[in-house]
Amino acid sequence: MDLQKKMFEELRDKRIFDLARSHAFSYSDGIDKMDVYPSEENLKGMEIFDEPFPENHTDAEEIIQKLHEYGSPATIAQTGGRYFGFVDGGAVPVSVATKWLSDFWDQCGGLYVTSPINAKLETICEAWLKEIFNLPKETVAGFVSGTSMANLSGLAAARFRLLQNQGWDVNKKGLNGSPKIRIIAHAQVHASIKKTMAILGLGIENVEWLPSDDQGRLVLEKLPELDNSCLVLLQAGNANTGAFDPFEEVCHKANEVGAWVHIDGAFGLWAAATKSLAHLTKGMELASSWSVDGHKTLNTPYDSGIIMCKDEEALISSLQATGEYLVYSDQKDPILYGPEMSKRSRAIELWATMKYLGKNGIDKMVTGFHERAKQLEKGLKENGYIVLNDVVFNQVLVSCDTDTITSQALEHIQNSGTCWCGGSIWNGKSAIRISVCSWATTEKDIDITIGVFKKAKEKAGQILSTN
Image (cartoon, rainbow, N blue to C red; front, top):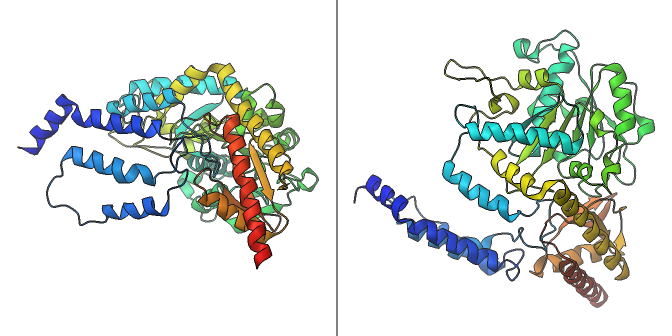
């Protein structure tokens, strides 16, 4: 059969979609029973994909079946309730269903004329985000792949404005010979910020590094005198401890002299959407730009990053897109608010998630992460773990009496198949980093996890004593 005719037939008879749906439901139904991290056997099973590039087309049902049979067991069960490795989040069911539908739409979200529905929902989400985060009315939002791209967009806007403050148009003149931008950051700035500075040509060696306190927050007393050439980098939610920088004090000092404050709020910015945790973000609305993920704390599917900026001119100017073939409208054209020209219409599932949860639902879900983290903190302390951080949000950082026991305990935890979390180094000490960020995590999941940690510590101690 002619390949084009075959594809039309596959669209009509729906068998491959029914097969994919069946396998997806099977995966979802078994998520609590599968290994949270793939076993060695299932990882080895991926070798079946090592094959020469086919000369001819492959049957569609065979492809779907192969992916399910060998791909599904090799996935990370992050949509379950016991994956704590990174702040990856789960996926609210309606957001997954919405993504399925929007994948069929396959909208290019760059312009209003390429996807009116995406442009409309970006406008709605922008308004809702400003409301829930209590941001200035002039704030605009761009919808990007994740906080890495959101940080890049925010820092590009800052670069444009801070150089313009000094009479330099970076779009016309570039960076060669440009005035200096003073970059102020503390030692616990996230890796994505460092990566962004390298991409934008700002340079790590140009940073005026400040000390962090024992929770990974900027030490306010060490903040230097600022001016309108300064870019100050803060964070809402330290990746290890979950701690929040002193936004209000820093922003007041910055705003007095026209400095730019960017807040990396990948997962922590959502604390502002709660009644009980909003105090952590006090003063964040005084910043110049903010980055945040939907696919972390809000539990949308990947990828869903957001850049918000109160200087629309700086954001658009730094991310400008021109071309004779581009058709701009009198509506929002998303291409102007992010680095991508061809972009997935990711605001569709963001809108669905926010509408489904509502303000109260977001509050309850985010507050629940904190409650489960506190439950975990209490249980691990009772079982001899040393909690290294103040559990103010969703992060729990623990260690054992020695680095050796900590490392061996972590290995047992990761090999258990029951739960999974990652390792870190905190103040020179080996640590186990636990991120609670899935709507599916229950009190029972935490109890099970505490049991795994207890056994892991006992095994690590036994190994040490026999050696």
